[in-house]
Length: 201
Image 1 (cartoon, rainbow, N blue to C red):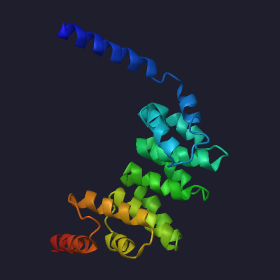
Image 2 (tube, rainbow, N blue to C red):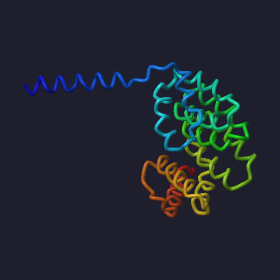
Image 3 (cartoon, rainbow, N blue to C red):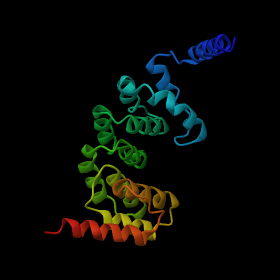
């Protein structure tokens, strides 16, 4: 009886799961992003519906990235970054020239972790002098594997009043080092020095 009960239970869960499956066309799923504040709670609950479709939904996202609504373009950029395919990254690099959404595009390029984003991010770093923009770009560069600006990124951690920047900079350092730093800038500085020493002839 227990075996039969378990089989019935499993079958019931399968039916429920199937009924909850999103069978909408990709265009409708992307349109569902409209009106959701990027990074907000409702957006966070909806975002997986988009990125779970991975590469197949990228063409619809690219089309939506040209929308007149800047908030829609921001939402699309985040999804493109999380999917991170070659086409998605290429479109994000183009979107970096959009002044209305550039901050979100930098974040999205960091999400992608693609080395192909590094040249564009370096160009953006050279073009922006304010500490807020530079901090975000430096984080994204590190997330994409760029190591030429580690001292600058450490300076962000030491001086930034933006807790989000401190948190994400620390995350980037921990990912590169393969260890936890717990936002301890002295430990990070020691790691950077040991890394430089190891690379010296």
